[in-house]
Length: 91
Picture (cartoon, rainbow, N blue to C red):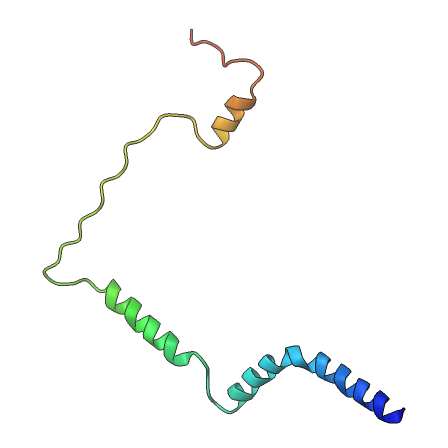
């Protein structure tokens, strides 16, 4: 009887601590001075810096802007759809 209650308490403790294990592992690695993902962050920042610097001999052309639409959009479209009467005529 006593052994069953001890096993039940250990199982309850394990189910409580199991979700915290990744956090404890990360905390342990940080305390030991190793920063997980540091190399990946450095590689990513170098890649971003390499693409952001202007290349010589390569001209960057801007894409043409799409034609401007004069149709109602967004809030005006909703307002016109919910209106009870048409807007007044121009005089």
